[in-house]
Image (cartoon, rainbow over all chains, first blue to last red; front, side, top):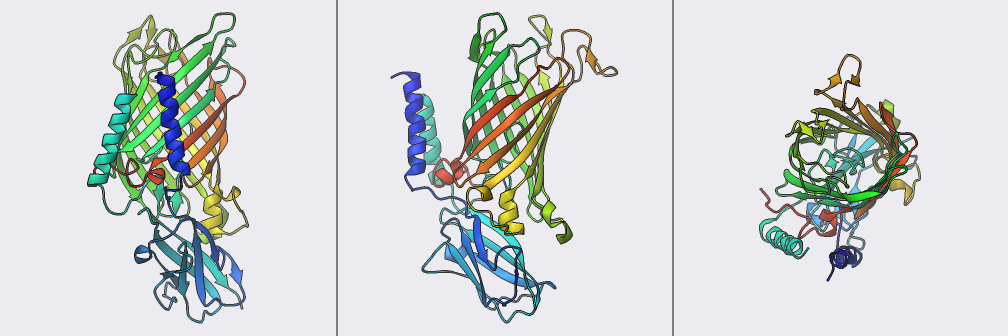
Length: 123
Length: 314
């Protein structure tokens, strides 16, 4: 078997595994509600964060702070049992102001990612 | 190749046996994801592979044209200690002369992750690069007849910690590397082998960071994974014929040279694709514009439980 043939087979193996669906990747934030950096006029009762990968519920967390750094989320963040790539954070009655969502998640392949984003509640 | 395959299998088995726990991996510092840049070294250890990197170099000063096909592999031994390997095949078509081609020198490096500062999206890395002599086609492929050692410092900084009044600058990031090439032989076939100071920078504006960390501007796939960037490299000889006053050489050496390379990277879940134009500058450089195209795989995402993990987890 030639060197070129072996190299081709190795590359095909790599790409085949990649396309086989067995791999999982870092969980990136895909979209959120309220949206990242957005201004909403109706205070949300929860923050929903959609990721690009399914999450490990026991090691995925998030909370919401107001502009003074005080916690306004009213319970632990939890992964949506019907959609394991969604993290939900319950929040109390939010007054007009700027809020920060801070999250850290573990995707099912044990890769950790974290981040934060703001949203504003307008009167 | 069989030896390589067996080696990879052994690495995978060792990884399965020895690795455990959560994994941070390629280019993350807090909220910031740093892609693998195309001209300059990355400031992080990783389990990644570029295959292939296709380069059409700018025509040289005599009108000669060269091309190369390269492969890069980065492998973490521990979460903070990694190795890199680079090899390429070169094709050179001088103007009015027969073409020459062959493998270039084998490049390797040992790297250590000095620090990662998540709140300020900073990271730093030190390394020792080695360009090994007599590992390629010396007369036809541009390979060296001597080994060169290159101590290196690489860094990255994201600007997500800027105040909210500078929202639109938060997606900016810069990575860079500083190194000195120290050849182990003074003279090769009549040409002086100079000590050379290298500096390279990549200025990135991450649309991924903008869309998912700063402001939802409505970017959907694939645009929310684009990272436009400009890379600038410079190499300055330090001795053996280089006149630091005039910036020119007295003999066989070269003056300060480099490239400016604007381009874009699309970074997906398992791989990234990069494309750049290559614009040379400096004395003795050619004219015109070259181009680079690279396919780059994140092995830690493709094979998170085997070869994508550090071999040892301490």
